[in-house]
Length: 406
Ligand SMILES: Cc1cc2nc3c(=O)[nH]c(=O)nc-3n(C[C@H](O)[C@H](O)[C@H](O)COP(=O)(O)OP(=O)(O)OC[C@H]3O[C@@H](n4cnc5c(N)ncnc54)[C@H](O)[C@@H]3O)c2cc1C
Image 1 (cartoon, rainbow, N blue to C red):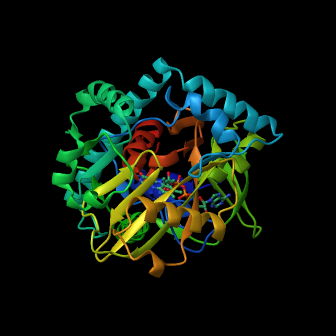
Image 2: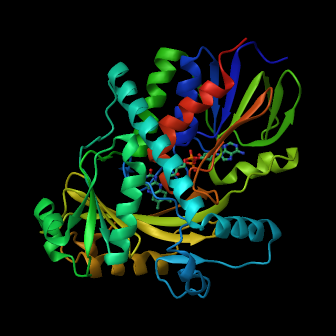
Image 3: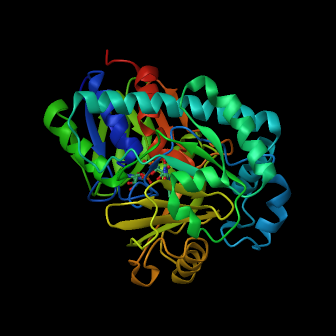
């Protein structure tokens, strides 16, 4: 029998760690486990660091539709869509296409913005209650829009999401350069920009470490690294988690927060979720003579530039269907060249670090799945391109759904 009031959270990325926090505050005795020895070993480790609470468009959009053939043929250097003979993946792609319709895009963007604003409030509350230091900066964010059509689309999205109260504006090219003079050196054209002055940046992996230290010390959360869960047996009153090392743990509540790998545990139970892997890369380099202070998203090239203290972090590429998190040196170099072409003086690209790659767990509608699957099993998965931004709000919702221990 599992011990009363125990919740086992599988996966210690940012979603698992924040889930552990939200459940511990509800009175659960939380055991957080991960296959890796430490927290934030997956997508939460080297991401773009942007807390994009304001501008949160879903990936499946009407404007992506006409570009899909080009993506499938590998003609876009930043976005690859691999086609493979896999029924599950084919179903995911079909669902993704369905979500590109205008009404679906509007609904998904609205829902994502709502969750992002909940996240912002939850993060502010966390920081009121606990002194955590993880490089949080009020950097503000500029999303560069390539042409007049993109400006019109962004204007429509802003109207849609205005109700959530995150201040943002559409700026002309000149006004954007006034806010971030480094954009004078931006080589590609842009017609305007969305400016979100209150968006932030912070180190997601450091946040996971610091939050774990806090919940271990103050809420009695126990973390076990090196524990790969291989099977879940979903009983009525409790679920049993079996690990690769032969251990087994039973608990009245098991949460799967395993990012893009969640289906390995969920599919055998008949609970497969529509999650596709989407690989991305990041690297850092010393800040150059025109290094931006404000976070920059170059939407045409799918690149983000984030200021660290004396370095610049560049993140990008969207490789849908890629499951290996190994750095492909050629692709990393292609991204580095692309970054250098658009912001040549932002960084000393010749002194870049070795780079990193991670897998975003994508749902067709860009919304995470936060759900109870049975009386002793729940999930918090599928945070896609915005998991760092959405983690706090998602985990709050999870805790509300599962409630307090009996
Ligand atoms: C290049 C890139 C840039 C990004 N930039 C941003 C950004 O700027 N802003 C933003 O908001 N988001 C960004 N994201 C997205 C964000 O990083 C992810 O959405 C988020 O990290 C997902 O968190 P997660 O906890 O669900 O998954 P992960 O961080 O991948 O964690 C899942 C964990 O589960 C563990 N696990 C899986 N299966 C098992 C098992 N069977 N047993 C035990 N443990 C298991 C894994 O070891 C892993 O540690 C970016 C992602 C990438 C790749």
